[in-house]
Structure formats: structure tokens, C-alpha cells
Image (cartoon, rainbow, N blue to C red):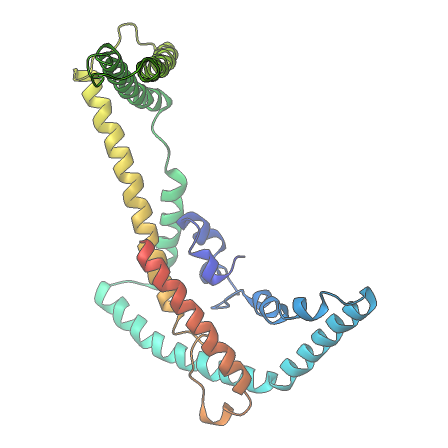
Length: 295
């Protein structure tokens, strides 16, 4: 099982298999228990960095002993509040779920069917046939070859005009430098052209192409459109993944433990947890702002 927050960073198939929402018996467990302990114990690094091995082990043992005693002291209130919260969530969501099921004419069995259908659909997704993938790659290397030819033509033209474009009255060293620069550009362009030619010939051998395709003919345009469509689908899937991932993360902001919402009779017992929850909410909010800018 992965953390509820970390799960949305994986692909959808990974979520269906390992996300706590879909694992029977986990309920809405966030799966971040170890993360909370690690976060609190990070301060030990500064205080134990220059201690002897004995005193370092002693400090770590005392810290976790105090951690256990501190959490055990508020465990009753913690369980009681979460129990009441769970009852309230069940009562509220059951009403909403009944309304949705009535409006869409659904039953409980439909949700399991939707889950299984989605898993079957994702398992059945396959890449294009190997032959089509090779020909799509062939289109790409043909474009690279055409670009290398254009660069080589430009380099030769610039080399032929190197002396004509040189300013009048320049010395021999400047003329020599101009010629060497033009020659280097021609050699570099020719090397790239040779490599592109060899790559095209290799792909032609794999794809079984006897006559080289011309840019703009029927075969070229067909697989060029296919390559563009594949690139578009990849970009669209990535954008959809980011947006859906952020929507799920936003929904986590309202869950218990990440907000500054407590019952009146639990304020004193949960003062420290409340403060840590507030800080966690601030960190999550900043992370989501950065995520929005990235999307």
C-alpha cells in the first residue's frame, strides 16, 4: 500500500491496485503514519550530530519513548473524535450516495463492476503494433535527415561566400580564421548528415522499405499524422493526469489531521496535534500552489 497522497503521483492503474481507497479493510487510512514520525524526529539530527555513539542512541531512545507516552496520553480522545467523525461521514455520504444512485439508477453491484471494468480496460491497453512503431520512427528519422541536408547546404553556401563577405582590408589571420570556422561548420554538418543517412538506412532495413519515402507522399503523410496523434495523446494524458491528481490532492485538504478543525471538548487534549495539523495544511497549500503553476 502507498500513501493516500503519494498514490495520486502514480498512474491510474497503480492507484486501482494499491491506493487505500480501493484496498479492502483500509477505509480512508492515509498510510502516512511513518511519515509523521520521521518528520518529528528530524530535529534529532541537529542535536545528535556531534554526540558519541552512546549518547546518540540514548537521545534517540528517549525521544521515541516520550513519543509513545505522549501519543498514548491522547489516544482515547483521538479515537473518540475520529469515531464520531466517521459516523458523521457515513451518515452524510450515505444520503448523498442514495441520491446519486437513485438519479443514475445504480446499485451497489454497479460500483464493483465499474472498478473491474476500469481495471480490465487499463490491462487491455496496448501500444501500436511493432511495425507501425518502426514506421513512425522512420518518419522521425526522415525529418532529421531532411534537416541535416538543409544544414549542410547552408554550411556549404556560407563557406563559399566566406571570402566574399569578409570586410575589405582585413589581415591574413582574420581571413584564415574565417575560412577555418566555415570549414569546421561544413565538417560538422557533413558528419551529422552521414549519421542521419546511416540511421535512415538502418530503419529502412527493419521496416522493409525498399524505396525511400519522399516527404509529402501518401505513406509519409499517413504515418506522420499517426505520429502527431500519438504525441498529442501522450500530452493530453499527461495533462489529464496532472489535473486529476491535483483535484484529488485538493480534496485531501478537508480531511481530518490536515485542517484546523476540532471539537470543543478536544481542544485542550489536541493542542499540539492541532498546531502540527495547521503547519501541515500550510505546507500542502504551498505545494499545491507550485503544482498549479507547473500544470
